[in-house]
Image (cartoon, rainbow, N blue to C red; front, top):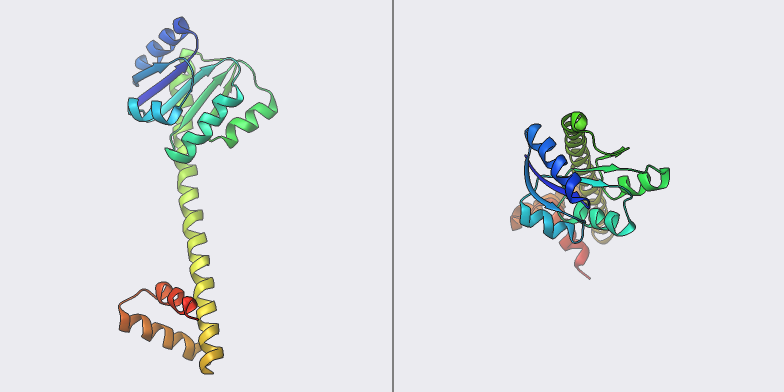
Length: 186
């Protein structure tokens, strides 16, 4: 797995790089700070981001938030400080794991494995939530279109549904697309 390592301390970054490589990871790039993290991840082709930062700044967390929005990847943050507000802000920014008291080589592999699994589980839940929202929105559109047909044509709900379905089949459209089209009329 390709890792982007972020560490402001060059000597420590080299030790962390060695630890990551010993754990079976490929360190694609090392940067001192998470400036434009999305660009850095793209350029490095990184699949996982490991940040070893003593005190994560607001800018660093905002860069992680942008990455989570634009190019979601597991982010593991090893920090020297662990104030509750800081941890909460990091988790809201999409950080998969926040480890206090810095990086220890023996803990690298298990922490990354858990963070990667947590990230993938979270992504799956997000996809399921998005699908559920889309289904609900589609259902609302269908119900509104049926209601319009019921009012305008004096149909029962079942008759309006059949009519909507027939119209969609005649036009080679999906039911939701036909319902949207009906709602656009007038």
